[in-house]
Structures are given as C-alpha cells and as structure tokens.
Length: 479
Ligand code: NAD
Image (tube, helix red, strand yellow):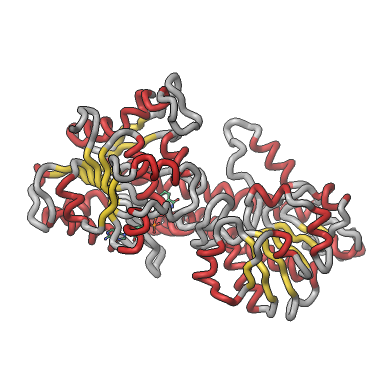
C-alpha cells in the first residue's frame, strides 16, 4: 500500500551520488529503485555491500534494502514503475574540457523508450546549462509528447565523506523547474526535509538541520539551477587556489598561512571553509566542473579567465610540493618514501583526480620507491597503481625505513599519529606535509625536519629549513 506522501522514484546510476540519493530518498519514506548498468555493482548492492566509504551508508542500506529500496540493471522496468526519474550518471570531461553528456543522452533515450505515463525527469548529475533543453529535445525526437513529461534540474551538493548527512541536512535544496506539476512532485519528495518532519524522528541521521531549522528550498528555472551547481563548484575551487596562492606568498615573506587563513576566515563574509592550503584540489568534481564551466562561458562567447588561473595555480601546487621534496632530500633516485594518503581528500575512498596519485607518479618517474597507507582508498589505488608501490598496513609501516614521510591526504587520524613512534620508524626524521596536518612547533619538539605549505620549514639541520624561493634580486646570504 502506498502512502499519500510516498513517491515512486527511479535513480539511474548507483555511484557516489546515485546510491546516496537512492538510500536517502528511501530514508525519507519513498519507494526507490536504483539502477546501474554494471551487473556486478547491482549484485553487490543487492547483497548489502555499500561499495563506497561513506558514514551512515551501510546502516541506511541495511534498513531500507528489500523494504522500500531495490536495485536493478533494468532501466526500462525502473522507469515504468516510477513517477520521478533522477539521472545520476557520470558527466566526465571530454578531451576539450567540456562535459561529456553522452551517458546522460543514452539514459534519456532509454527513458523515452520505456515511458508509459507522465513522469518528471530530474537532472541530478552535474550538467552544463541548456542540458534540460537537450533532454526535452531527445525525448521528443524519440516520439514522446511534451505533455507526457517534464524535465527539472535538482543539482547535488553533497561532499564525499559526509555525503549522507549532507544529503539529509543540506545547506539548500535547489529545484529548477518551469512547470507546476514538476515542482509539486519535487516538493513532495523533499517535504520531510523542507517541513522538518524528518528531523523529529528518533532515528533521524544527525546533522545541522532540525525541526525548527529545516532545509531551505530554492525554486528557480532549470537554467539557473544548472548554473548554480557549476558556479558553486567553480567558486569553491577558486577559494582553494586563492589560499594556495596566498600560501606561496606567505612562504616568500616568512608569514604563516594558517594564521592568515584564520584571520581571513573569521570574517563572516569570507568564512573559514575551503581556506586550507595544500597540494591542490582534486576529485571527480572540481577539476572537471571548473573546466566545463569555462567551456560553457566560451561557448556563449565569454572568457572566464579567472578560472584559467585557478586551474594553473592548482597544477603548479603539486610541482611546488615536488620541489619541496627535492629540496629536502637533494637527489630522489633510489630514495624510499613513505606516503600517507591516496584518496583525493580525507574521509573518502575516492582516488579520482587525486593529487596524491599524481604526486606519487611524479616521484616514481624520478626513481623513488613508495610505501603508502590510506585508511580507505588502498583497494581503489591498487586498481590504478597496481604493484608499482607497496601498500602498508598502517601509517607506521608506511614510514618504516623511509628516507622521508609525505602527507598527501588530509585524513583527520593522521594528525593524531604517535610522532615518537613515527620518528623511530623512519630512516631519517623528515616529514613533508602537503596538507598542513601537524604544528611546526610540535614537530620541532619531536626532532623532525618538517616542511609544510605556506609556513616556515623547521629542521634540526639549518640548511633544510631554507627552501623558500628568494625575492627577486636577493641571495640566500643577503637575508
Ligand atoms: P560515479 O561514476 O560514481 O557513478 C555513476 C554511475 O552511473 C556508475 O555506477 C555507472 O556505472 C552508472 N551508469 C553510467 N551509465 C549508466 C546507464 N546508462 N545506466 C545505468 N547506470 C549507468 O559518478 P558520481 O561521482 O556519482 O557522479 C555522478 C554525477 O553527479 C556527476 O555528474 C558528478 O559530477 C555529480 N556529482 C558528484 C558528486 C560527488 O561528490 N561524487 C557530488 C555532486 C555531484
């Protein structure tokens, strides 16, 4: 028996976004069928394997699987059963930087072939402006009358690592639709979050929203919704590159980026988030979304040059880190390096576009051997790097006998490692921290040579500390 508040939903694509969305829609009381065209994925999900590292995902999967959440490879069956169809397939970059929408188009064609009644097709994937128009065109080219469907944009803002709580406690829910019928259905889907009823339930997933302070819903047009997602990611990437550029300036003038970022972030107009200096952004979203947003601007005859600079700073940041490794170790051929972190950021097993992997490959090409540890991403890294590196059982094993230890991912647990034990494990007590996880003063107390991003290096040996680029016209002795 369907309750009045329940919507029949199909989610196409069972990856980081699709799976989380499907599980969360089930948590909101809807009847959900989640589709993927990779048979092995569907089998694993049916068997209760949550496949990705996300807090609360295994619990919610266990709670709803075979109750109001099912998995299938049959897109046609899922479409026929559903009132709303969320497209959550990948939108990777093409060689030219714009988004490859062929997966979205393929899904739209298949939806058209399976239509049996009015449905709302919802873009959940991150797509460029005009995609909703294209989906409408594809549906009509495949013989579906315009009155039998609507297309809405409902971009997803979840962050990997906190995806479930981000989904259920969103900063905002953006609904881009230009038709009352579609808006009404999407309102119904998100009603438990927007009205706050979800947060009253005793076993609600905890997060920032509450019954008194429920999720905000922003209604707009499909085009504006599409732009909101691209513009948000491009802005966040800009924030990261900006703080990295400031970090480089800090190094040149003997200032401390952590203090500078703190002072900037305390201004509520700026905010503290995404002001962490490091080896740059990665992941499956920022690099491709910045490139795609630039491409969108170019296609309509506008230059978005600031984004070119954002990308350039991000690329150079990895080189700056490699330069620090060279400056600390002199020659690299034959050096053994311990590496902490393979994922593109902490709290996820995702290694797509991970700066850590890029840095490892660059060091390998210079003749280093690598022993790495990551709390969640080892399996995925193995599929990429194969046996070219050693995979350690923990951080101390990664450090064992290494000429230096490199921190490449901001896993919170790395910050609380036993430093005395790490020092004993290392061949030389050198830590090169691409994520500023440690305090220089603490590292100094423990007798490490410590190099980080945008802060003065410390070393028991004076020369190692002086790896900062010199201002034009100055020599090391004139300082
Ligand atoms: P993903 O690669 O993890 O998942 C995509 C899934 O779609 C895969 O499992 C794939 O097998 C499946 N798929 C592809 N074609 C299919 C088809 N024809 N039928 C059924 N299944 C099909 O990707 P993701 O990280 O979940 O990202 C999906 C979209 O969401 C992208 O546009 C991305 O930019 C956007 N997004 C991602 C995040 C994130 O943090 N990962 C956050 C917000 C938005």
